[in-house]
Every structure is written in C-alpha cells, then in structure tokens.
Image 1 (tube, rainbow, N blue to C red):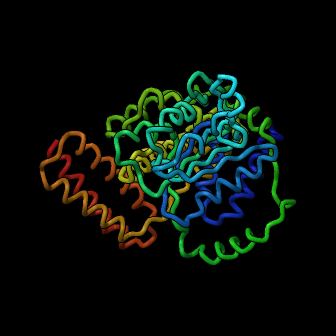
Image 2 (image 1 turned 90 degrees about the vertical axis):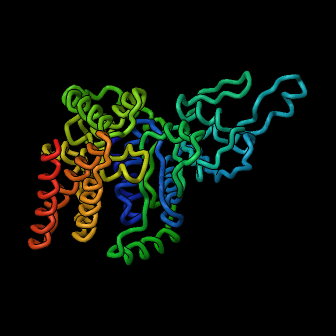
Image 3 (image 1 turned 120 degrees about the vertical axis):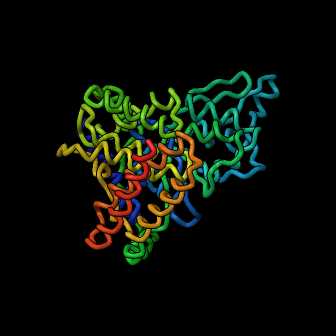
Length: 377
C-alpha cells in the first residue's frame, strides 16, 4: 500500500509542479481517481483544464486515454465507436470500440453539456455504473475515472441528471497575479518536457488502491458526516441519498492518500466541492471549514485547511448584501437559513483579515446584523 500511495503522490506532485497555482484542482482529481468517482471542471477557456487532465492521464503508463470535445452534433459513433461492418454482414449488431471511450482507462469529455439526446442515455449509464450499453451489447468499462469540463453550468433540466453524475465539482480559474511569472516559466518548461522526466504509475496499481479505499474505516467521522449532510440539506443544498452514499468514497480516498487506514474530521474537506451553483460555493466553504477547523491531526490532507486570505473590501461587500436582503423582510424560512450560514462563513473569513481596523469595522457590521436576526426570531 505504502509504495503505491507514494507513487500516486509523486505523480500528483509532478502535475502540481507543472501547473502552478492549481494544487487544489490536482488534489481533487487525485481524490476522485482513488475513489473511482467522476470529476467536473468548471471555468473559463484557457485555465488549463484539459492540459491538467491530459498530463495526469499520461502518467498512467499502460493506460489508454480518450479525450473528446462534444458539440450538439456529436454522434454516438464518435464516442463509443462505429458498428462493426464485418459483424453486421453476419447479422450481428456489435460496436467496434477500438481506440474509443469503452476501452479507455482515463476519459475526458470537454464541453460535456453539449451532449445530445442521442448519446445522453448511454453516457449516463457509463458515468454512473461504469457500463457501456448499446442495444443488446453490455460491457463493463475499465475507466479509472471520468472527467467532464465546461465553461457554463447546465440550464436545461434534461442535463441535470448528467451533472448529477459528477460527484465533485472543481472551480478552475485563472491563477493569482502574484503567481503569473511562475506560470509563464512553468508553461515554457512544459513545452520542452522530456518523457523521461514524467513519473509513472500502472493502472493495476491504481485499481489496487481503489479497492483498498473501500476498506478505510469511516466510523470515527460517521456521526459528524451524518449531521453535516442533514445540515446541508436544511440549508437548501440538494444531496440525494445516492450522492450521500458515494461521498463516503471521497472521504475514504482523502484518508488513504494521506497514508491512513481510518478517516479523521479534516477528511470532510472534500464536501466543499459538491456545489450545484456558484452561490453554494461560499456557503459550503463556511459550513465545512467550521467543522474541520476543530481537527489538528498531524496527517491531515494538505487541502483540508487551505483558507485563502480574504479581501476585506469583498467581505464587506458581501456583508452589505446580506444586510440588504435581511432588511427586505420578504424571506422564506429557507432563505433566512441561507443568510445565517453565509453570515457565519463571513464571520470566519473575517478572522483571517490582517488589517485590525478593517477587521474590527467588518466585525461590528456582522454583529449588528446578528442582533437584528436575533430580534426577529
């Protein structure tokens, strides 16, 4: 176990060094790979979404990679393969899957929400059950992980089922301006990289780790996890029973990648990335950070407590928005809970502000809003 974990961490470290400022993206992809769950990358063009996945896929020495840009006119043959003409002459309707998605170990589908109804049903089964079904054909897929990407979130309700198949949602944006020089240097290096410099891991080694992931003891965090799911549902974040069950795989993967055989409180950090809308990103971060900040385990995942130093002006702007919403007086019970959760999150963020005067002013505004809230309860 230790050797394979070291190999995987070496691979992830290589991808992080290659793509400066994308540590969170790479770590989340590593978690999904271990858990054998699907990841969705959301962000504008030019933020290295496909390049990161391609680099990670290339480290799987014996793996077959499949990458495709979907359009509204993409046909099933382009994804799953054409019908086998030789078999068709014999009266059999079989698919020639050579070099196509059903044979790939790593699958990346760009602009995933362009999928049309012709391929949607087969794609849904492939993503959820890792099975390719077409007519009478049924085939288990060897895919270690599926990754989808888009620069927009789905608006058509017909695509909600597809979006739901991606357990983790990763926000990929342009890097901080402070890191831009490092990005330019790393990008130049990437163009001249030699194959011998790339660390390797075999697909069977990843599968061994995926099986080991199922044995991780979740009892130490089970009660907190259960209460967290209930809390998130009460906040208005929809988590189906199916997703609640699958999310346990991600928590186990966080423990395993840290070399532990049991989960700790900080492994719940992965729940920050199960949002459905951009508005939920901050809400989740606030709720989950308050849960995991109590943990000081020496072998916590490095992403567990990555609190970014907030911009005081942005925090104050968000506080004023909440004040205006609360003062409107036309809020439902659920909307009131959302405001309370956002306010708690901003209160936590406020603790990280370095300027004492700005910090004190924002804290006073937050406290004033809490007083109003308490008066109406």
